[in-house]
Length: 381
Image 1 (cartoon, rainbow, N blue to C red):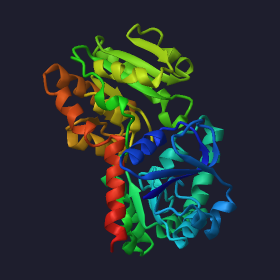
Image 2 (cartoon, rainbow, N blue to C red; image 1 turned 60 degrees about the vertical axis):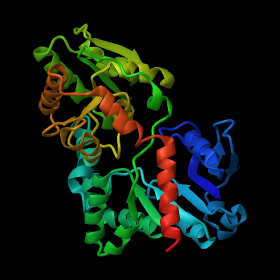
Image 3 (cartoon, helix red, strand yellow; image 1 turned 45 degrees about the vertical axis):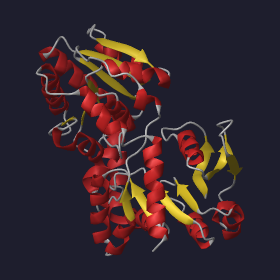
C-alpha cells in the first residue's frame, strides 16, 4: 500500500517522529511517501515530494501520487487540500494535535488561559483580552468554520486522548453536527524508540525532571519557579533537573537553591537514561494536547504531575500514573508534587509496571498499526 505523510511545512525533526513513521511503514511492507513544502531533513528513508500551497489544493496533484492513504498533519487548517486529496481517491486520515478545545465560543475558559493568562503586564493583558473578546463574539465563526471543514474533509479525524474526543462532542453539539463524531478516533501519540527500551532505574532519590521550551509563555516558567520554591520549603531533599532551551533566563532566580540544576538543552538520546533515575516529570504547561514529554517519562517508569488540563488528566488516569493539581495555581501544583513524592517514598509506585504499561502503547509501531487499522475498518464500509 502506498501511504502518504502530509506535512504542509518544512520536513525536519519535530516532536512527531516522522522518521519513525517511515521506518515502521517500511517494516510493514508499505511504501511511504512524504509530502511537504521543503525537505530539510536530509535522508528521509523514502520518497519526499516537495509541493506548494497552490499545488496541494489541486486534485490532479494528488491523483499523480496515487496514494491509498494519507496521514495528514494540518493543525485544523487547509480543508481545500484535504478535499482535493479525497476527491483524488485517497483515504484522508487527519492526525489532530489538539485537545479539542480550540473554539473561543465553545471553550472560552481554555482559550482564555492560552491567550490571555500568559500576558506580561497590564498593556499586554488589555491587548490580549480585547482580542479574546473579539474572537468570542465575532471572529469565532471564521475559525470554527475552517476547523469543521477540516473534519468534514477527513475520512477519519484522529485525536490523542479520550478527553479531546469528549471536548469535540461539545463542539459538534454546539454546531448541530453530531454525525461528525463517528469520524473521530483516539490513538495515543508515539515516542521515539529510544524511550521504549532504555533502562529503568531504582529511583531511590526524590529527583524531579522539568523540560520545555522555556521562552514559550505557554510553558509558564514563572509559575513553575514559584511552585519549586514552595516544594523545597517543605521537602528540601527534593532535587530538580531543568532541561530545555532558555533555562538560565527562566530559572536563574532559583540560584539560591543548590537542589536546582540548570542542565539546558541535552541530546535527545541522553534523555532516557536521565529519566530512568527521576521519580517525577513535573510540568507547568497551560495547554497540551497530549504531552509528549510526559509519555517519554512514563515509558521510563517516571510518574507525571501537571495542571488540570486534558492532556495531563488523560495520562495520569485518575492517579494511576501521577497526579494533577486541583487548580492552575503554583500552590496546587506544589501540593500535587509533594503528594506524589510521598507516594514514591511510601512504596506506592512500581516503575517497572508503569514503564511496561506505556511502552506497549506509545511506540511508533503501535501508533502506525492503529492508524492502519482505522483505515482498514473505515475504508471497507
